[in-house]
Length: 140
Image (cartoon, rainbow, N blue to C red; front, top):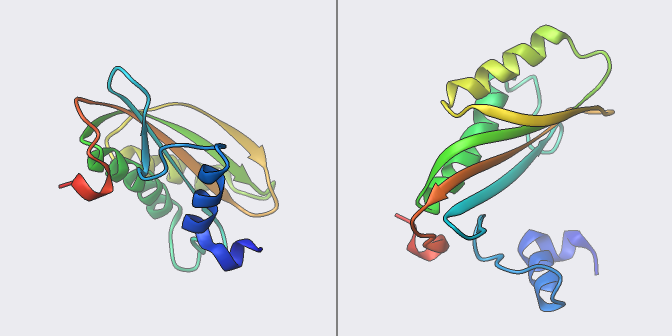
């Protein structure tokens, strides 16, 4: 069976049925004491292209999708952790523009990692606090 046959949800079901992951009905994970964590990755050529999106727009979008996942879990966003994979020819000014876009979302970046990659990718983890985690069916 190939991933192209199962899709993301089929893969998650397979992993959960084997006891390798749990709680996949949520986009975010509630870890106890109200701590909520969510993470999304964006890959150039798969999720975005720079002929259709600026670095700033990419940064804002990456932050916003994670903040939205926290909101769906009734969580208040506290911090973002950003991982970047970038080709060596990437301009520093472009990376600054990316982080300016992230900053527009209004949640501070508290850590992360940068590595060399053949194509650009961006992974953002958002951490927040919630009194409850309603899941996809109960989100308002």
